[in-house]
Length: 547
Image (cartoon, rainbow, N blue to C red; front, side):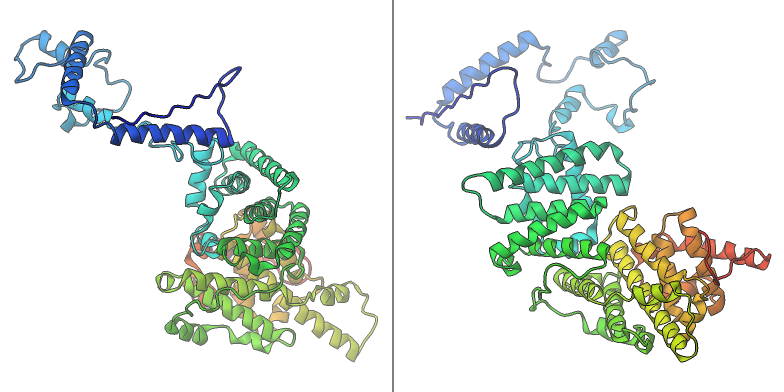
């Protein structure tokens, strides 16, 4: 006896609409269950019934369609042949539409139709069965494609275990927050300004989901709730709304403390790294230490290859140890930065574990934020009238010079990490903040910057700092000030061509992805500035300069 199917009917009132949540899941489960039962459990029908139905369907088809007879076709001549061979409704015009390949012109019509019928009309859809917790639209397809193809290195750093998609694809709030972030990525990276509405819509939906989870009677601080808040904070960081991001991080801190600390999320590696990354991004914008304490991520991960460590030890910038202020801290930061740049180079990329790279990047970022803020040491000195003389003035000047060097090195190293290793869009507000912080450290009144760095025996580091700033600054007027200062340093060091400049940069930190695409434009600007200097139209490094 055949097993009877179970049917469930769902009645909707008013106009048709797409169901949400549990009802849609019930419909989908019943439809798929009936489909598989019809496919695998249909063996009870007798073969003669099959034959009878086949004959009836063939007769119906013959009455509706002109089916070809089996066997070779009759050869006809003249216009009758050409009219029968051509499909109805298709004109013999070449004014529009793609040309038919020559090898397909001799293909019978029924064969071409057979090939076309095999095309899946939903193949271009990412979610053809509508299994995600958000409705499937063409905007969803665009955002998911952006998620799958964008920000490769940052996904390595945060999603080192490839666990993020399986985590967010089952929760509506978390998926909405992620889609809002990637809509913003599409605007900043690819200029897809039509996604602005999607950014606002998905962000509002994520906030609604957070409020529903918190306000529900049986609400709890789940991993999905924490992940939604962290992703919203990341979206606000990318947007440049750091005050709103700080509010999200304050709420995130209370949630994490209520769960027992960061290690309560040790089972979800992507979530823990995402929380740390959001905190570091916001702390970088405010120049403050992170809100969360330092944790040791995966101490059992494999170390960097021995050959890479040997190369890094041989080529790392040891001149930083000579700094009179925070010399050891700066050396440790740039030593790790040098190893990170080598790890993402084509030579070592396949040999370095994703977890190893992510852990080293987090450690470097944390060290940057824990260096004290020395900006007041040179800002106060430059603003004072300097009525004091003699030894006190000399000590104050030396401290101010050292503080400006340290602040410039830290700002440039953070720019390098976020644009070259984290792959944050260059149009993000964070870079305008860091570039302004760097310029304040370099553009001091009545101070010759080249002399300050030469006195500190770090003129090559100043070259690297200016190249990083010139590469991250927007092309055009935003890059002009940096290129002019770079031209002075290039002339002082006697750098003759772009290749020699690249060799000097590789001794500090270099990535082809970051420098390779913009170094040519930067060097061209330096070359043009050098010709202007020869004509007596150059710019001096001394005193304040307008951009």
